[in-house]
Length: 140
Length: 119
Image (cartoon, rainbow over all chains, first blue to last red):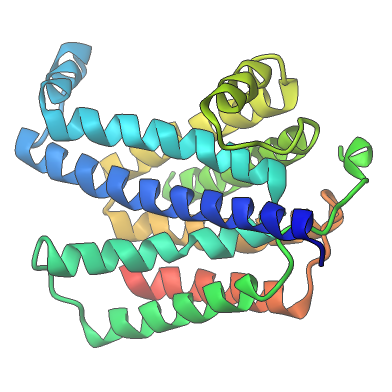
């Protein structure tokens, strides 16, 4: 593998990391904000606008917008069947964030789930990120 | 009604991700500097595949909100699990990706893990 190729792989890895971290930070921030706002059961859009007065909610939405853009950027560089399992590590990190930041309990069943997802991530990480080189004009 | 919503969520999620992947592969590989990112976003607005993909994901999101309003979160999980397997299948046959046993294994472990995590 030449130098240019390894720089390309590093960019894909960095992008993958940003996708995972922005997913976790966005979701944790948004759910923290929505819990502070409280239950919204209403047909009026004004009640939902109230949620945007909370800084955690706003931060969560902005970070999730960043997540959407970086996810698309990643899909321009890597296979969908690579991106899906690898970015699932967000589930594991969200469970840990809930445990260490919000002091949520992790049951034995959830530990098993965390191990299974981690194994899936490791398995996908061992495959090359992109396998469709040069065939993009034939897609759909 | 619940199972209809689960079907819509799984289907629209899958179609959305597959369209997004196909559309993004027609653009240049994304770079990380702000100028390139701005250029990439501008091109997305003229990329019908990605626009359709984002529309499909929006439908899935609205269906998810409806499902959450009539049942609890754990009921929505099968939709996520089905999406992982369906998307891997379409990645192989529609997007022509090389889906080896490692990738099938990865998708299955994640799908099973996600169900276990929330049930």
